[in-house]
Length: 214
Image (tube, rainbow, N blue to C red; front, top):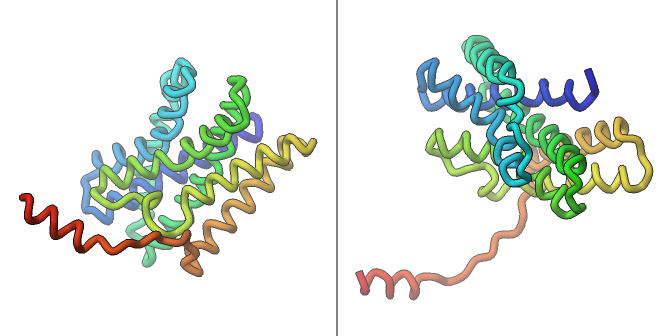
């Protein structure tokens, strides 16, 4: 089993668990938890493969991944009943899945012969879209669209991974460094509420005009 394959299994388990925890917070039944967990774990990779024309899709070629993610979601739901801080567990698992999937997405895009820019974008797509779909299913504003650093962390992780490889660093070391730094950056962003600047404008007159027209 290769390093990236091991990381992939860890990542889909972590993301399936994060989906299940989010579903529990929304009081979903067991079927709902499994659906949300599976979509969270496999959604980003599915969208990436569709964009790249990479067939068959990962979970179609390896249907055991479906069973693996369902199992991870159920285990997370059962263990979560004994956890006092669901939010903390959710954030750790989501952060791990974010950076791990980013590296995996970059690697798959590289193997497909994509350009550097597309490689990084596919890494970010793999990293963020599973969580985005999870949040939509749970009727919550997606993390990627909020102020705290999320997509930015994925972008930095992908750029670091690709940059290290182009600098001659081995794939294993580049993977470890990119995931480690990306995970640390995400946790720091959560701990200290790091965020990109928000552009604000006075929209009151625009809103008033819309109200008058309607």
